[in-house]
Image: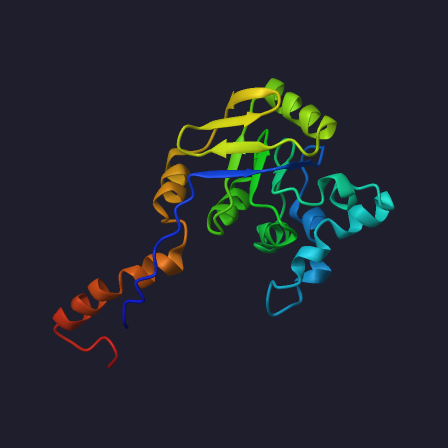
Length: 203
């Protein structure tokens, strides 16, 4: 195995406009219906994000609202991403264009899957979350900045303190969230370890 010298991708902040999807306990089947999981790759999954909810809303779902068409940050309610553990949910949202999530709380497995894709999930208290949602809906072009290092979110409504677990914060800041790059970056050390073994690891 050779070292590709790929640099780890460190994520210390995410900036962009927002999109609000209101409601609590939004499960992964609503985010990406199971019938769209019969694929070999995730490439086209973004266009099916919230497919059934969008059809039911007849063009009035936030993801179909032109005001939010370039949004990079999805603002959600409590327990977002609950239900099944399908990785397809964050994959679909990422491929739709979202780079980070802000909510009241996130299902643990969903948040873990997001971290493995380099998608920060940060939390706000009820009051601040309500302010952020209202601000985004009032001014869709307004910028939001999430600073992972300082645990602060800045928007038109002001500066807010966000929650993010210490371990996840460390992974994002150090680039350890990307398991493949971590492995490739350790190529030389892996070869040295393999050469020092008293047996052949390929035997």
